[in-house]
Image (cartoon, rainbow, N blue to C red; front, side, top):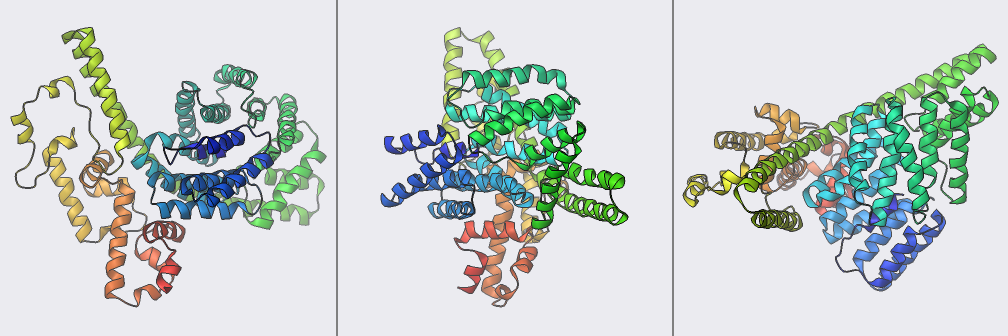
Length: 547
């Protein structure tokens, strides 16, 4: 259930009345009940003029409402978050819309918004990246980056397994466990899945309070059986999962329908398979979009009509397959391109984490030898407390780098020597990057800005690092320390500064089509430009330019 993400607090004060309503959503027996309670929160929050509870009401309603009105809740959620200028809330809104877009097969929007959400969380509330990583992992699985998605799922599964005291953590543990089982199945790691599947069923048996995800154990088990070619067993389990979904008013997803149809096909029940595959095919040609794993449906018809159809039907089925292949190639290439940006950031964060953990490990080893056990406990306490404080301060402050034991012995005079008298730069903040490298990167950034290099189409961190003759890890850190921004924010701010200047000096600039303006500013898509623009100026490009 995605709506549990809405329980992330955007305001530290929450009345017991709202808390009770949120708990009722978490304990809902079906989606209809959850949707009704979400709308009640919206109504009460509007009456009491409580913007933060209204925001959470929109989040909940957007996630659990399954009819056509859901989109208005998503728009209201993002608009209110931008109006409040709450960076975490804006990140939440992008996250929710990105997640929901995946369920409607709008994968381009999903990957755009998910990567934006990842940036916001990374800059403002790092612990929340765990939520958006789930959908990024799903996108990776859809474009067959199975090893990468499996790694993401396993990391987060292990984290939530250790933190099951809060109910919404239980939901996320369940989601990641299911995703990990499915990723392992695709990679034929069935031995690993034996214990995970048992764990999945045991979790449902001991956590009756987590009502709306009980079908996942059977679905994941069926998926694993299918990849082991145990089609009869998979068919039985997938039907049990569908029965649970029906009872809890959870819509049967197209992926579930596909797995059911494939099981019928593999067990020789061709007539039943035909009906389900046909629904998938008809829906694709009606909406011109579908889920990326739908190819077996089109393969089925080429094989079916080859045996049972006329020449005309055979040609039509081949044309249908080619149409799907074209769609699949277009979406996958776009998603793959956008996920490279995530890979660069996630890799950098992992490297910094590993580096910092190593420094802390070195420091602790020496401290254990040098200090009494009471002193060690005190220093560990102070370090953890300091880390907690830094996380609460926010993105406006430059991140600190953990200092090892030897660095703690550094004299005040040595510290002063690390601060340039010419520029006032405190090079100690950039460790482990040396002074010369910091200066070189800063000079490259200055040249990059003056030469309008930021207008390059779809510019990535890795590509810019190569132009600067450095690596993405160092460039990302210098930007973060020097400007207090992520790479994406740095790039976006430069582009809008350029736009502001253009609007002042060229009155005709705004008369161009939005797509043309987006392209000239270097944005990868008009959609991304529009969302970034609205966040910056509080209006859509059309509203702003026509105003």
